[in-house]
Amino acid sequence: MVVDDLFAVLEEKLEAALRKFEALKKQNAELDQALASKDQALKEAEAALAKITREREVIRQRLDNILTKLKVLELGD
Image (cartoon, rainbow, N blue to C red; front, side):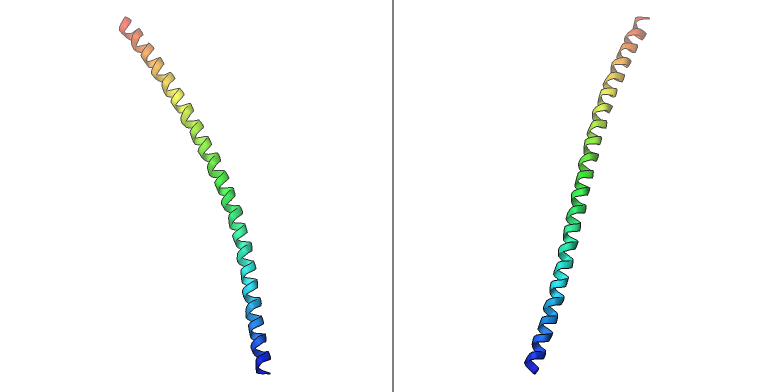
C-alpha cells in the first residue's frame, strides 16, 4: 500500500511537471512570435530612418547649392 502511495505522489508530480513544461513551451512560442514581430517593426523603423536620413541629406545639399548661388548673386552686385 505504501508503494502505491509513493507511485501516486510520483505520478502527480510528474503530471504537474509536464503541465508546467507545456505551459512554458506555449509561453516560449508566444515570446518567440512577439520577438519576431518586434524585430520586423525594428527593421521597418530602421528602413524609414535611413530613408529620412537620405532625404535630409538631399535637402541639405540642395539648400547648400541654393545658398551658394545666392552668395554668387550677392557678390555680383
